[in-house]
Amino acid sequence: MTMAKVKTLIPLLVLIALCLAIGLIAPRFLTVSNFIRLCTGAAVPLILVCGMTFIILIGSIDLSVEGNLAVAAVTVGQVGLQFGGTPWILLVFPLVTIVGALIGFLNGAVHVYLRVPSFLTSLGFGFVGVGVATLFVAGGSITITDAWIRGAAFYRVLGLPMAVCVAVAALLVALYIQNYTRLGRWAYVLGGGEDIAILSGIPVRRVRLALYTLAGAFFGLGGGILAAQLGLGQIQITTGYLFTTITAVVVGGTALTGGVGGILNSIVGVFVVTVLSNGMVLMGIPTAAQLGVQGILTVIAVATSLDRKRLVSVK
Image (cartoon, rainbow, N blue to C red; front, side, top):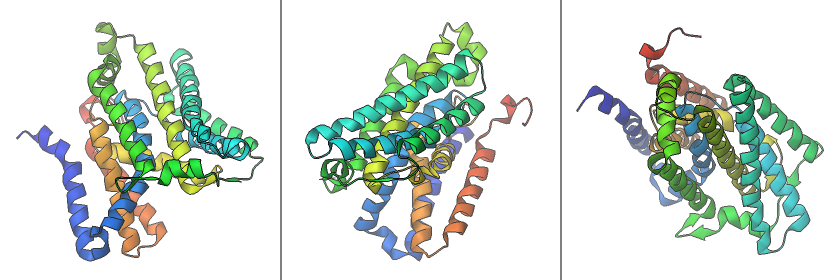
């Protein structure tokens, strides 16, 4: 087995080692109820990494996650407040997916056609999203009590909450796009180098724009499910999801330089982060220490995943 192959297996080996170690220290970790709790906690991050993985694959970044989530969350809250009570209310989830895609499209268009760095563009759209969401609820919050919306997160299918089923469906769509469409294949080529992509005849601008739009759609859906899970339409519930999403993608083995990794890697990354967080809670480790451990994990993952041969300088 080559060193490159071994390197791709490291995140999975880390996940297995974490499960075994935490299981020995906290026996409650290895229970069915805790497994369901793990899956429930991983549902929203799994949806979010579907979008972020494609962006990082092309060597870019999208920091608009929390703004997109905030818009989706307050939209679900407002729609539930005004039109709740019938199964038609479930159309709010396709609605926030479309709204998220629109935000992603605008984000990508500014980045691609005005040639603004993705870091600055997406950071700006993240702030815009948070601002719009704050105005939408006048700085307050909406309690979501509609049974149909809440059921979209907690109704059980084969013992698992519906949120987990939605996450699995999102992952299957992302895997299909990655493995069986030109857009997915072009993402890898573009991540390997824009000059190579141009020489290969790939419409670079359209690919970037399409992937930002796709990522926005996944972020919008994730925000809708998050609001349904927590029963709240407010901006505060989105805090921390940007860091968690990027951490999961990078920890899973998708390189920030682009062209390496994929959705399966990100799935492993999500569960590494989720298992670690869940295990620390079971072991009684303070929240501040948990954030510190997650930060250290991110630094280590970035340091080991970077292809330094492709870095002209460290900025």
